[in-house]
Length: 226
Image (tube, rainbow, N blue to C red; front, side, top):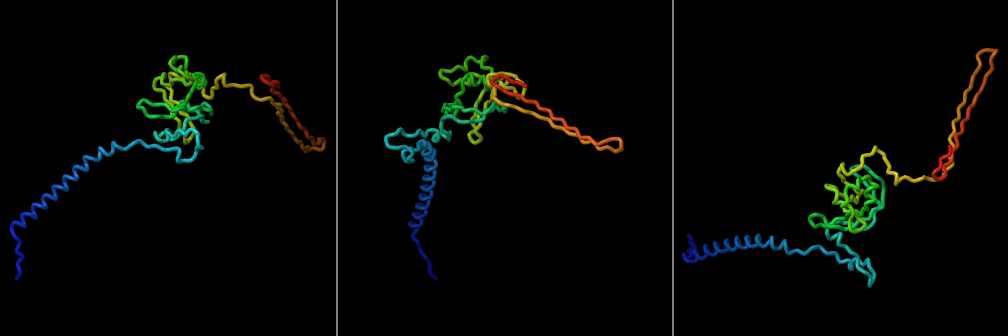
């Protein structure tokens, strides 16, 4: 039989080395976990260099792409949108949208609506003097709990206005300032009827009768002639 004789001191050194190696691995793992939060906070904000897109000629001002960096995803400008006030459409309008900061400091695309425009949407602007802002855009925050959301995918501007701040009108109501005289037109309505009578007795004859009714009309400016 062959016996492997290992010195006693060698066995102790090997056990000590193995123990130290295990402790070193644990220490490295803990240090790595502690360093991860620090690394997460060291990332810089995303930046898109417009010069790399080749969309601007030499010497021209670079395109502002900050809207895409902040997660808004759309550029400020004028959009042809369907305006919805409390789930009811008030027509399609060309609305200017500008970049504004919300309550938490994030950039959002908000509509620039004048006081007259809000009044045309059926909002009681006279009850909220704070709507008058420094520029042409009304301060919608002057109406408590009012909000505006631009749904780009459906091209809708959804305004949520408290019912107390909205004029009460019948469904389908159109404000007088939105009415026009229409177009000039010549109208002609007609009604034509006929009847055929067949005689069943020898002393009677067949007869045919027809009736035509014409109802002409003309629209010129505010005049309606019938």
